Length: 314
RNA sequence: GGUCGGGUAGCUCAGUUGGUAGAGCAACGGACUGAAAAUCCGUGCGUCGAGGGUUCAAGUCCCCCUCCGACCA
Image 1 (cartoon, rainbow, N blue to C red):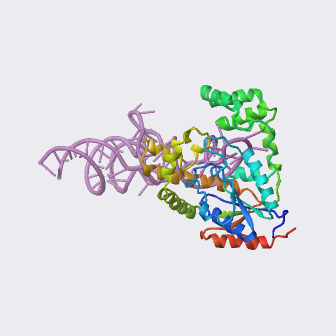
Image 2 (tube, rainbow, N blue to C red):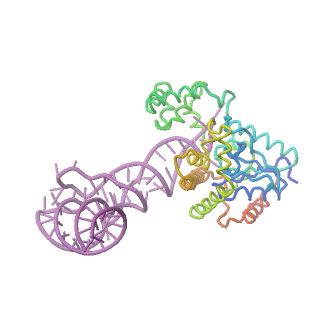
Image 3 (cartoon, rainbow, N blue to C red):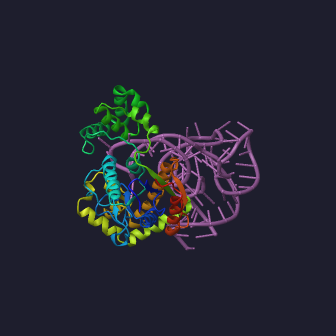
């Protein structure tokens, strides 16, 4: 059985690469439990569109699903706390954590030494203030203001990237500097011992798989799921309504496009998302890439397991 | 058969009074520490439907052919 010092097995990759199935097969084989690192699967009620593994298909315990309601704010820092304690709990049970996710930031927050100093995180008045400023005076004016107060940070953020300029203001309000944080980024190492695997799928193959998956989601009742969420005030949320597969269906349900157009938009947005994920994970040299083109979860899991068996166990 | 529109980047289209073409979207590449399925940055030689003509010079004018659409027969 795995002892508590065994490294966390980490499985990453773009959407539709087959992480979910492979991860639980690996977990089952090593006596482990899956921890999902996915910024949208944390929301209750968002099941079909986020590709959440249905409860009756789970063969090992899963964590990281349904942590909050769609209206509630969340953050990478909260996920870090959650993931670290999940790792600990699983190890205490003599299990082995299998972190599985496509949200790069959440994965890194979970396993790397990202420091999120204590303080207000989600319901941030500073964020609200500067976001309003940007809306009123424009992105350039916001950036100019940052340049006046923290030129070093302004220098490393593009004026159009309002989101990040605002973040620099937030840090400034806490007496920290975005520039300095960015400078130290490269030096950040692991906080949790891990073995990382990435599922590699050729873009063309992945695109076909994405298309099929989106059609399957619609067939499985995605539209009804969105309708239910809307009735429950889903649109009041900050992050949840931005989820791919949800925002497009909302457009259709509110009559701004047809369902067919919405479905096409979902496929396209998913493809673009997969590309961003590829870019994110590609540069992490710790990741060992596994060929997942065949779409055979068993085989992917076996490849991972065989590599794991070569790992020196402490 | 006739008249009028239109055939320009993968798609939708701009292209002033002729000076060898440019936007949006897509695609591709990249960034990313508290919203990250978010946010942002970078990359545009394409037989300007085919052929001929006028001109120093034609996507842009003329002729002819062809394809698509609308209307008239």
